[in-house]
Each structure stands twice: as structure tokens, then as C-alpha cells.
Amino acid sequence: MTTSFEALLPGTERALLHRVAVAQTEGRTPSFVGAVVRDGALVWSGSRSCVDGHAPDADTQFRIGSLTKVFTAVLVMRLRDEGLLGLDDPLERHLKGTGAGEVTIAQLLGHTGGLAAETPGAWWERSSAELRPELSDVLGEQPFLQSPGRRHHYSNPGYTLLGSLVEAVRGMSWEEALRREILEPLGMSRTTLDPVAPHAGGWAVHPWADVMMPEPSQDLGLMAPAGQLWSTAADLARFAAFLSAGDERVLATASVEEMRAPASPAGEGDWEGGYGLGLQLLRKDGRTLIGHTGSLPGFVACLWVSVEDGLAGIALSNATSGPLTSLVAADLVRIVAEAEPRLPEPWRPLPEAEVDEELLSLTGPWYWGTYAYGLRLGPERSVVLEPLRGAGRRARFRALPEGGWVGLNGYYAGETLRAVKRADGSVSHLDLGSFVFTREPYAPGDAVPGGVDEAGWRGL
Image (cartoon, helix red, strand yellow):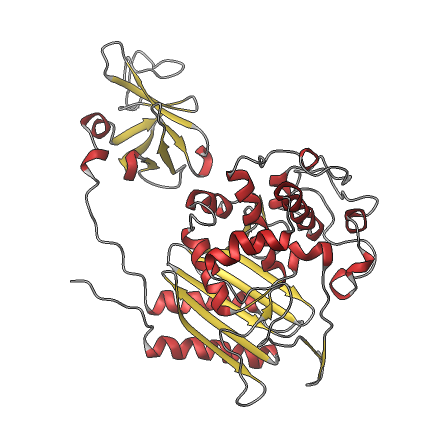
């Protein structure tokens, strides 16, 4: 029997609304919108406002700041998937004359390019883009603070370069590429470069008094790929579904998974996480969240996705500081995950075509020295190798057309696993990047590097 649980339980909805209400009150913000996505669908949204009867809804635009960077990263990954560039290519190969051409595209995506966090001169978020008409104005005379690749250092100019890269390779504006390649396929009609009514106004709230003033809203010009966009909770729900499962019209699932994998550590700070290719990664409440935060004068925003739980939390507010949207979005995920945990998929046998006796004969225990590991089959002839007890190097492997497997995660990412056969066709051992796994721990005659003591095992 199968039961549908599309709507949230009333108690869960009450807890979500309470979290948003607390965020609006304690954050001292004019308005706050929260939303939850479950299994790709928007299942709840709620809001609070300082004006009775005028609370925003899931279709009200807020500025989302650096959440824009995720969209820019998707455009770059599309170029990679089409073979128009490589992530390890130096920027200079595709975008000439920047003065920062030695940095690679992957380093720009993961904020390890060594570039400054901000532009030289006036505070770019509150000043006219006319002050930065060229990339040289964005980067300054000395764009690098350190050598590329050495450490994580968040860089808004880095994503300005990526936006210009998209324009150079695509032969169209970043805005046009964004609209054609992401927004239209995903049905995100309420995500725009400039505000379209209904939209929230941006406000600064005095830190020591309950008064406020409007914040300016600047067009960011060349900096637009780093933080220009306005969006809604409903549109970001569609984007969250894409970040969770991929969408072949936009980007293959494997490429989205690549974006979600850690590309650099988080650097300094007290949150446990890192950065992928255009995505922030956060470990909180025992779960891994991927997404991004965003802020511009008058606005703060956050989108977190828990792929394992099939959930996403969205938090949008229209105050420069105060509302902790990153914590609220994570809490919205936690509230639903704890109150209504995801039902596991029914167990099903693998398709018969994916299993044969040779594959089955490789399953079970293997030993790297005296460390015990287990090998089991997965879908599409994949395998998982994991320690049988304690911490260790667990990894998933994808089958290769020519035989063997390639590592997909962890220590063995990119490494090749193969079954080495004896002259009679039987399997001698597994080779994983020169590590030898045998059926017995140090059995005589096994292919153990350095050999095995002839006297064998002994007592004290």
C-alpha cells in the first residue's frame, strides 16, 4: 500500500510559522518569508510583517544577493559540459587581458583564486556601477592577495570574471544566457535583474532604536553575476528542486553532484562546512546542507537543500542586518525532517541485466593488510567499498566501459579500482591506486607488496 504525504501536518506547519515569526520579531525586520520544499514541490510558505494585513507571500520578490553566484556557476558548468572550456583551463585562454588570467576557472568557482574579496574604491554594493565600467576597475592594479590555489578566500570580483567569461564564450550577455538557459527552462518567471512588482523594499533598521530608513538599490553593472538577482520563495523552490535532483534541460545530475562536492574548505569561521563549485556547504544538525546565503543593502536571503532528506528551506527578509536567514533556512529543514522523516524507498532487487556471477563473486570481505573491508554491488554495476568497522575510507565507484571502476567520492575520488586475475582466470586481488586488497589478511602466496612472513601467524 502506498500513501501520499504531499501536505505537511498541521503541527509541522505551526512550528514552521512560529520559527518565521520569531525570526521577524527577534531580527527586527520589516518582513520575513519562509518556505519549505519537499521532494521537489513547494509544500509550505509563511510570512510575518510589521504592517498588519500586508505580509508578503511566496510570489513577492526580494533581492537575493550572492545566491546569484549559484546561477552563474551553473552557466559555467553548462559551458564545461558542452566542451567549450575545461575547469582547469586558465582564465586567459577564454577571457583575454584581465590581468588575472593565470587563475583557473575551477579556482574562481570555488573561491581559491587568491583574488580580493571586494573591489577597490567605493563600497560597490552602495555605489554606482558607473564607477566600475571595466574589469580593470573591478580588479584594481593588484587583483591577487595570494597565489591562486593556496586557500579559500571568498571573492566577489572572481564571480564578476566568471560572468564576463560566460559572455565571452557564449557570445551573448550574462543576463540573456541566464534567462535562456536556466530561468525559462525551470519556469522561474519571477526571477529578474531588476525588481518587478510585487516586491519588497529594502530597509536599514537602527541597531539601538526601533526606527528604520530605506536602503539604496543599485544596478551592479559588471558585478551583476556576483549578486544582482531578485527572486521569490516560489521561484527559489523551483531552483532548489533543480539543485537536489538536476534537470537535463539545464544541467545533468552528475554535474550538479559535482557542484555539490567540496572543492575548498570554508576558511576561517566557526561554521562547519566548505565550498563546492558555486555552492556553499554546511554541516548542521547532523545533516549536510548545500545552497548559498546572500545579502545586499536592505536584504538578506538563504537557500539550503538537504538532498538526503529531500527537503529545502528558504528564508528571505528585507533588512540589511538582524534576521539570521542562514539559521532560519536550516531550521525549517530540521523542523520538517524531525517531525515528518522521509520514508525510505522500498527495497528492490537490482535489474537482472546488471548482475552476473563474476560480479557477485567479487562481493563480500576484502583485506587491505589487516583492515577488513566489504564490497557490495550497487545500481548500474557500481560498487561500494567500505570498512567493516570503525572509521575508514568509504567510497562509491562507477563502472568503466573498459572494465574496472572509478572512485566518485572521498579519498579514492578519481582513482581506479580493478580486479587483477591470475593466469587461470581467477581473481587474485583488487588493486586500488596501488593498494592491494586480498581475500585473506596476509595469506601465503597472496600478492601482498613486500611479501608475507614465511612463519605465518603466531601467538606470544
